[in-house]
Length: 189
Image (cartoon, rainbow, N blue to C red; front, top):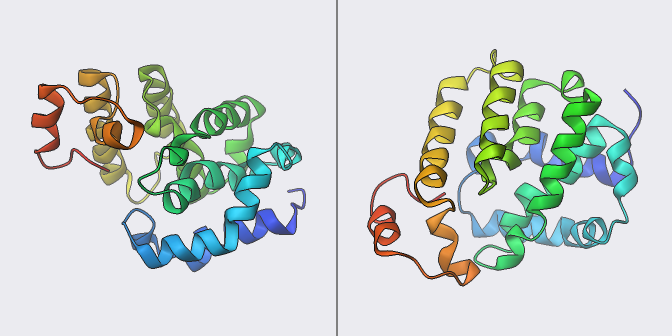
């Protein structure tokens, strides 16, 4: 594999080596603060297209996806900015799929590369996500859990065409059905 910029490697090392798996999907103000201190400048530069050349490699692309899809949610929790680069993350994922980059990643790396598709409020992205799970994560040790987690997400999109738990942050008015849904378990992620 080609070498990647040291900043990209720092992002990968922090998320995939230094951050325990059980902390990656939980609200943790301390982790949010650490990510902001270490990677806010990188997020800003990447958002301004300064790191677009990272997309030339599988691992560089993954570092961008982590910035846009994971770190943004930590750095800008409860702020619409958390979702502002979701479209770009999905474009990077699509480019990586077509370039064959997923073949060069391990199971955990593939999971984080595909994750922006399930974060999308577009059902077509979910459909592509399931196809990629079946193709690239069939040997993942947590496949059953991943599929259940994704199914919960997709149910919300099929029912509401959006994630109701984002409504307040994004300034959207919730319907009575969405409010009822949000009072159920597994309705907010």
